[in-house]
Length: 399
Image (tube, rainbow, N blue to C red; front, side, top):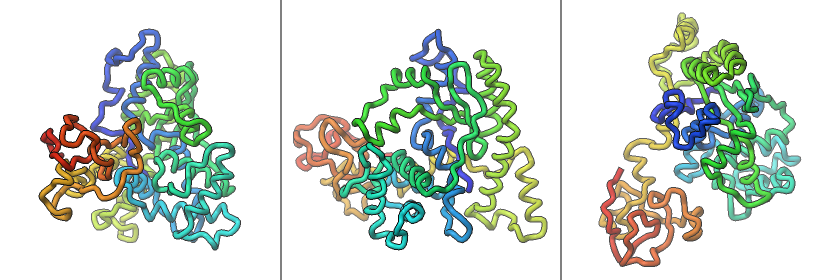
C-alpha cells in the first residue's frame, strides 16, 4: 500500500531556514534549535508515534482472501473525519476487521454494535487509563491520534506479528533516527529536545490516567525527509552541526530509502485512479514501461506527494469546501440552506462546552455553539456564538 507525502511544500522547510532565524534560539543549542523548527512546521496526526507504527504494520492486518483497505484510503478518511466530522465507511470496516481478530465472538460483531464491542475491549486494553470511549462518544468522534493508538493496540492484541521501526542512528543528544515506510526519515526526540519542545510550544497537560495524557507524554516523532534531496539536505545539516557519525549513517541508508521510494511509487502508479493514463500490466511492454519510469531517477511527470495530498484533503474541492465553513450571516442569512454556499449549522458542536473550552475551528465550525450572551451588542470580530438579534458587525471576507 502506498501513502502520499507528509511534508507540506507550501510551508517553509528547516532545510531552507536560516539557523539563526528562530525567535526561540539558544546559542548553546544550535543543533537542537534546528531540529526544533520541525516541531512547529510538522504537526498533525501524521507526525506521531502511533501513525508511524500503524503504517509500518498495516501489512499484517490483512491476510490472503481478506478485503483489504489501502493505506492511502485510511489516511485520507482519517483526515476527512477530522475535517468534516462524518463517519468513514473505510474506517468503520477497518475497526470491525480488527475487532474480529481480537474478539472471542467475532460473528457477533457488525456495523450496528461495533462501538459497544470496541468499548468493552478497550476497558481491558487501556490497563488503568480512562477508556476514551463512552456510551455517548463513538470511535469516529475521537481525535485522530487517539484513533491510531486504538487501531495499533487492537493489532497488538490480535497476536499478529509486529514490525518494529528500523533505527539507523542515535546522535549525541539521544535523538533517534528511523527509516520508515516509503523511505521516510523520522526523528524521535531525545530527553533534552523533548524538554525544549515542551517549553517553547507550551504542550498542554491533559487529565491524568487518560490515553490523551499518554500520547502527550510520548517523545515526539517528526518527519525529516521523504525525497532524495531532503535526505541529502538533512545529512548535510547534521554534519555541519558536528554530528558526523549520525550524518554518515543517514547517508549509508539512503540507497535503501531510495529503493523503498521506488517501490512506493510503483504502487502509486499501479493503483492510480486514472488508470487509463498508465500502461496496463497486461499490455505489451507495460511492466517494463512502468519500471523504466520508476528507475529513471524517480522522475515521474505526475508525482503525488504527501503535501499535495493533505493540502487537497484539507481544502476539498473549491465549492464543496465552502459548505464546511459556517455562514457568517446565519441565522439571518437570506438564502435557503441549499442555495447558500456556506454551512447553516443544524447540530450542536460536541467540542464546544463553555467559554473556557472552545472548539478549535471557532467561527468556521459548521456546528452550533449557542446564542451569544451579549447578542445585539456583540463587538467580537471572531465571536464563536450565533447572533439572532444582529448581523455580526464585522464584514467577513469569505474564502
